[in-house]
Image (cartoon, rainbow, N blue to C red; front, side, top):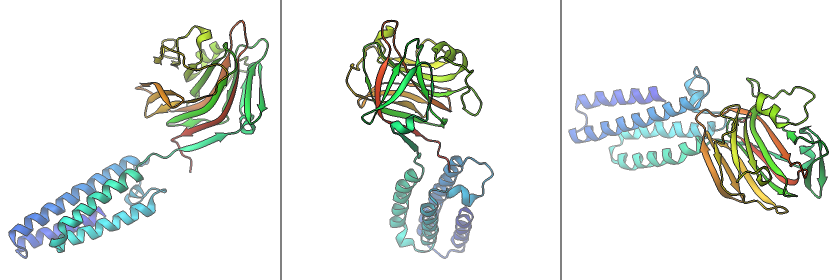
Length: 318
């Protein structure tokens, strides 16, 4: 496309020198051509940036697997646009406006990040591996998660790792005041974002601090003497939260919709649609498993109900 455009511009320059068009039209046409050239160069530069491979042919760079049809049409529009700007002066203004609008509408849509979504019913949640002493029971279309005697924390680990942006959402109800709710995101200890445990593992949190890379989101945590939802990054900086709220807003015996995750390097936490906080991580983790964890205190064991669990990831496998 670019070579065709460049050839057309060079040909037009020859017409300009030959005096086939009047001086005023020459200037207008040439300016239009150069504007179109800059637009095309910008499109190609953005397209190359989008492609993971650095040695991909131009046709494959411009047309990704998910938008070949749309981009193919756009290439044709540009070719027609080039011809008309060269040889149909009266249409210059209209065509340039159409081209600009086409670019503004089409490019953001084709460049929009796509997400894969995994939705987990109770039956599917039973495929998650559990650690610690506790139970996972189906109850009226919900999942009842509870600690048992001698528990040091009970947790469920996702079967697969997620990469890129990660967003988890679910409805959750703490069944007693002692229950602390935790989600570990991007949890890994290998270069390919997998998670290996030293067996047997009893669910204690200190083992996680010493062996995992992860984001730890903790909420409904008043029984651990915390003021509100927070996120920590392990192994460093460790105990100091990256961000923390100064008030607990979840109630025992009431369902709350929780959404948390990392998007474009920014960690965030929402309850019932309200953003509690967000914080930027300059060196974000790029993948790992998801862990759902509960912990009580020395007086009571933790217990909660969850439903409508969904995990979104920006890494889409073909």
